[in-house]
Length: 42
Image 1 (cartoon, helix red, strand yellow):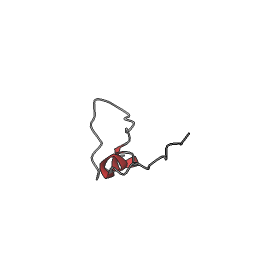
Image 2 (spheres, rainbow, N blue to C red):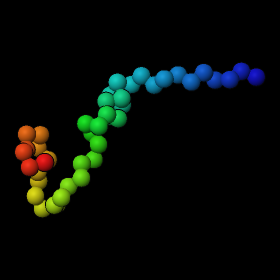
Image 3 (cartoon, rainbow, N blue to C red):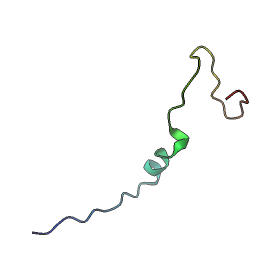
Image 4 (cartoon, rainbow, N blue to C red):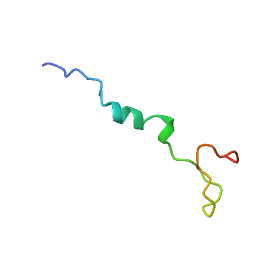
């Protein structure tokens, strides 16, 4: 009986989505939007 070789998935877009850049951000207040990149209050 032959065993299947595990091939590494090479989808670059899916790999990029796993990076911490796209993780959910915790928000202090839902009433105030402060998730812009250059915001100093974050």
